[in-house]
Image 1 (cartoon, one colour):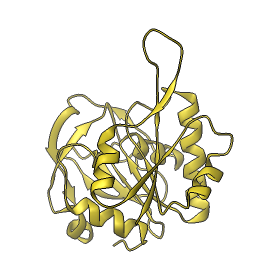
Image 2 (cartoon, rainbow, N blue to C red):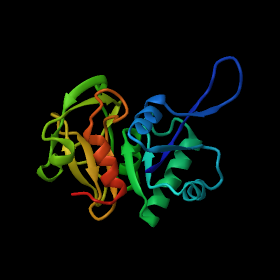
Image 3 (cartoon, rainbow, N blue to C red):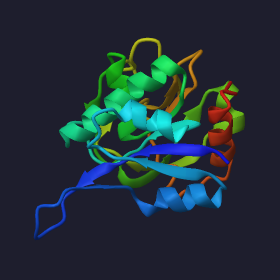
Image 4 (cartoon, rainbow, N blue to C red):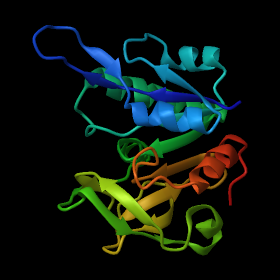
Length: 206
């Protein structure tokens, strides 16, 4: 059973001061249905890397939701986890906000976009990734920021882009890292994403 570490967002319930680390149930339902074990990472840890190491995670998912800069503790936790994964070889799937975090880490840029929240569109995939992602799949879209055609960070390689040329997915050759702007846990649910996670954890990528 694959052990999947997932980052969480900070939420603030109305009526009382009790910040919470939370994760959409879509993620746990999806991974459990695929026979994988979801393991949540809180944002209050002094040593997030040590937590993930103790979990014996096969894969780290930098989840979506919220823009970068929305919560300092989450930004700090996810940055520490990204650096840990890059230094140890832990496989990473970065989703939406996670994609933006990775791109920023490598010196990339973002631009604000309109019409990309609660919508769907196609993406064009490079040939070597089409077996895993499809040639021109329909994907969901829930983001206010995008990577412009020339905004990709150092060493990163685009593997999918939207009709306007924004980077929708990228990888880092030689590293088990894939970043996607769409949300695998939300409709449209793609059955091939199960194989994608398995191959990412096994470091078996194009």
